[in-house]
Structures are given as structure tokens and as C-alpha cells.
Length: 299
Length: 299
Image 1 (cartoon, rainbow over the protein chains, first blue to last red):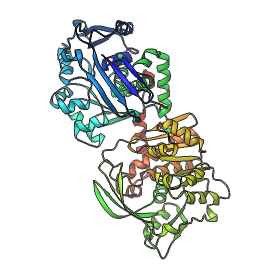
Image 2: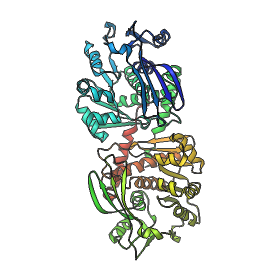
Image 3: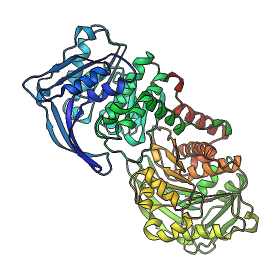
């Protein structure tokens, strides 16, 4: 959980709540309660933001509040294509001492989503769970492939679902073909691999099966910050709600995640996630059905 | 219709039949007969290739045979990512004098596919049709946007379906967002726009409606030459077979085109298109159904 300053071709915000755990929690909160949040915030983190999460059924017992440090702060500027960005500032602040502690009350959690952070911290969360969750999903990024590949591979070996983008899948596997990359990554341990391709949608791999989810063609991506985390939150939220971890249900979960991400990019930070209703989500999911449905009988 | 020399990271061929019209005809021939081909070939064009097309129901009356010149020849080398290529040789040869003449026997054609060539030649074909075909579709490329934009826009104004890739859609419209680009291009005249995104699939726009077709995730793209033309051939072939030019049937046509293109890239040039059977195609189309189908009831 963090604060971000974001500049896009469409506008600028000096300070807005962010962080992977924030987006995951907001997105998942539409589908399942409680959400047992594990994170860390500094002395500048506003009570109103914590209250807003609590109101949505987010349990904050596992969120460490640091009195003498500020929250993680990131500032970035997106280029015109919205796929590339420059990081202007990264102030780790309280993140420097982050050592997640899983409260006793979280021990029965069945679905564990590991947001993007140092792989050893993700692993620490897994190791603290006395009973293995039914499903462990993880996100990561190229930075950890560059700096902590061994730790990352240890983590990948013990999770069920890995989420990466296309260039990360290539870096992690050393394969250019995404089909070959997927096979190589699943050999590292996970039974499911999700490759996120931004405006080109997402791929779900499981054994020899593959599912392709579209992204909603949008007139403008106003701010892509948090879209991947929001996708993850919708995905794990749907799985936790339905308690069904079959490949078939994961396809639906990916559509739910894609729908949530399509809202996220419409305004700065998690603004849209705070506004939308379950009816908005249902209507957006129906748009995804129309987007890909075709009549096979005619052929 | 032409000859190509192709080099990919997987191999090399010094001379293989090619050209947009060849790929369109092979792909469409699985769905409709006759195909009234309009093209030009030189004195080096092998009789066996002409016979192979004839055998598939391709009428060659509109194919000019030039006795004192060679066929169009293109030589190119693909880079590792298969999305970019260097042109090594372009010998226009007989193409220099190409002035398509539509035979009387072609005048009842209901579906017209204008392959990528000089826009004034595409326009000449349209103008020679005494009765406007029910559907006119066209392909083009960035080269004509750089060198003949005015002629291209005149043609776009009179066709029903425009096919371009994503960067061409951006160049043609001056819009970065593909949704905005689609709207701008449809304002130029056509009721339907197809944006081809290679490994990321294709988008079909019509008014405010949009359809997203996936590309089949392939282990290797062996040779992408002709994939776009093969897509066009499958698309128009399905429409001509069903005689249904509704948005709904165009969705299916795009899946048929995508399936045909997925075969094309498996071997050099049109090799795979000469090998496959209708059963192979049906099975590949069923793969596309599995690729995108998800269970909405669960949400």
C-alpha cells in the first residue's frame, strides 16, 4: 500500500493512494469478504483510506502501521503509447523494514494472492501459513528477474498460478515463443500461467490447454497504473467467491479480472474502483461476452 | 501472383510461389467456387502452379500472361521476432505494365476482394464492374499511405470493408487509440473495418460494435509471408459461401480467416494451404471456439 504521483498525456496527480495490495483488495472486495490484507503503511497514510478499505470488508489486522516513517512513494510519467513509463521517484520509506507477519486470524485463508514485491517477502508469507491455502497465485516483475532470480524461482516452484506480462514470460523462460515460454515456466512448478498482454488481453495456460481473453478496446487509457493488480484482484476474487479452481472457472476469472482492469484505467489510480457498482461490473462482463462470441453453426 | 525468396530464422527458400492473389485464392477456394482471379504473371510462371489453382476452382481468365517479362519477384528476410522483415529485392518485372482487365464472365461476381496493390489499380477493378458487387473488401499497406494517400482515400470511400494492420490504422487516421482510429476510418466511407494485429489477433469494427478475434497461440511462426492475404481469403470465402454480410456473420468470417492464417504460417509460402483438408480447417476452427469460450453463468 503506497502513494503515487502519476503523470499521463491526459493529466497529472501529485498524490493518490496506490500499491499492489490496495488495487488487489479493491478489485477482490466486489466478490468476496473478508479480504485479509497483508501490507505496511507509514505515518502519512490517511485514516480515510484505511476506513474506505475496512468498509469494503478488508481486514487490516495484517497491515503494519509504522509511526516514524512515511509510506512507500512512487512517481512516474507515462509516454504517449501508455505501454512505457519513466519512473521519476521511488522512495521505499517504510518498505525498507517490511517483514510481513501473518496474524493468527488469517490462518484459514483459502486463497492467497501474492502481489508484486521482493520474492523473499512473498515466500515468507507462504511459509507462515500453517495450512497451505487451496490456491496460491503470485505476481512479480522484471526487476526481480534481474536482481533476485534464484529467490523468484524458489517461489515459483511452490505456487499454483504465476502472473507475468509477455516480456517477463520471455525473460523468465529464455524463450521467445509465448507457447514455449509457458511450457518452460510451468515446468518450474506452477500448474497455471497467466501471461498479461495489456491492450492485447491475456493468455491462460494449463497443461496443453490455452485460453485467450481479450482486453476491452478502449477509446482512451487514462491511467494504466494498477491495471495488472486490479486484474489479479478480480481474478482471485472470483475464484474465492466461487471456490472453484478448475481451468474452466479460471477462464471466467480472467474475464472478471479483465473487466475490473478495464475500469481501473478509466481514471487516476483506484478512483474508478471506488465508484463502480456490482451492476456496472455485470454489464462490463456482458460486453466481454459480446466481444468474443461468434456463431460457429454458420461455418 | 508472384515468386518470393524468403529467409526466416528457421530456414530459407530461394523461390516459392506467392503474391496476395495466390494466397487469397488458395484460402477462399476451400469455401467457394469459382474464384474469378484477376492478376498478371510473367513467362517464368510455372504451368503446374496455374494448373494447381485451376484444379481448386480458380478461374484464370482474368490473369494476364506476359510473354516477354518475368513475374513479380520479392525477396525478404524476417527478424527473430517475425514481426519485422527486411526487403532484400523487389523486381516489379511484369507488374510495371499491369492494367487489370475484368473479363465479361466475371461481371456477375458478388464478392470482390481487392488484394494489396497500387490503389488506382484496385479502383480500376471496382470501376470496371458494371453492377456493383454486394460486398467489396480491400487490403492495403503503409507504402500506399506514404506514396498515394489521395488515391487510397478515394478507394476507401467506395468499399465496404477495409483491412489494415494496427500501425497502418494509426497512420491512416492519425489517431493512436485504435477505437478512435476505427471511428475515423469508418467516417471515410467503409461500414466495416478490420484491424489485423498479427499474433494478437484481429478487431472488427462496425458502427459502435466491436468484435475481438484471437490469434491461435503457436509454438513457432515458421514463415508469416502471406498470412494477411490468407486471412483475407478465408474471410471473403466464408462470406461468399454463406452469402450473409451481416456483422454477426463477419465475426465468424474473421475466425475462419484467422484459422486459415494459422495454417499459412506453419510452412513456407502457401505450402500448408496446398496440403490441408476441409477436416483440418473444421478442427482448427473448433480450437478457436475453445480458445475464447468461457462460462458466464458462474459469475
